[in-house]
Length: 127
Image (cartoon, rainbow, N blue to C red; front, top):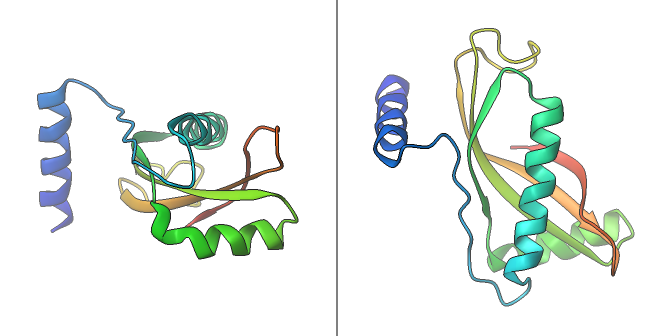
């Protein structure tokens, strides 16, 4: 099953001619600019900390997670929180060894927080 999934992903990437996508969602909570800035934060963190991995897709999880956003904002004592989800692949070494080698990770979530007029900050990630 994993092999079929990988083949389908690779075919999709070959057809689209890219290794990275950025899916935007419509939100009544966040502007497209808010979401794009959060995704940029994720991409930067990923690039700096996930050597040996290839980021394929990122997307806003949707307004249905509003209660989780509020909970994270309370936990981190900030004004706002957002969750960005991603799809990425690891190399044969499993990145730094903390991830499975040659694996595709789907729905890997990134929790970001910010206070009013500040940039998004990564505070946690995982399934």
